[in-house]
Length: 245
Image 1 (cartoon, rainbow, N blue to C red):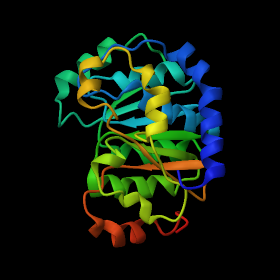
Image 2 (image 1 turned 135 degrees about the vertical axis):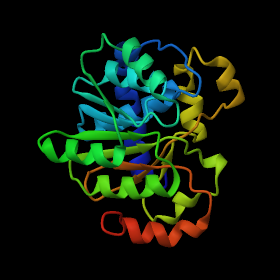
Image 3 (image 1 turned 30 degrees about the vertical axis):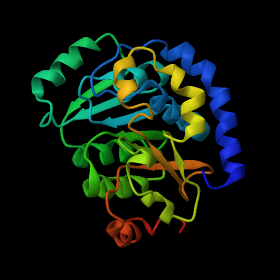
């Protein structure tokens, strides 16, 4: 994170949120390709910082992150999946496995069509959004549109590890945080208990990146793996209305 004051604020809130997270989320079964627990923790810290009590998730798959959201958030967890990647059978299997969580609303559909109506129809609520599909430029477009809604106070896109790309997010002249930062991994990777083999193969996790937004007094938006600095002009085009550059 480039701003020492913001980094200190985030680190302090990590400590404030840790006991709550451990108490509410606890041990979560490991699922192949699922989000690591410490990655989910980084988003939950943001939710606590910005006063969000509900989450919209796109990309459910085996539902490991969905289960963590359901345990942590008191409000509704919207779990959206178009079922094209992992198939409808896996979506229904996940839905059945998590049926005892009364705060999950499963939606089989397109994130582009489903997320915005939730935000627009619930203006009084604050949401964080977790996108694990779509990816790439499609994710940029959807992220930009969602962040124009003032009640979308935080946005996460999975698969953003600083070490795995060309640090494209650093083109923004504001506060950038990566969940793959060494201090965060060293201090909070212990939260991952049940995905030992996958963690050994990928010890920094899949990663989340965070930048500042005009819509919240604090860390707000997350972006995914940008593979080419060519996207710089696209960033400026899509995000200039709400990102301070």
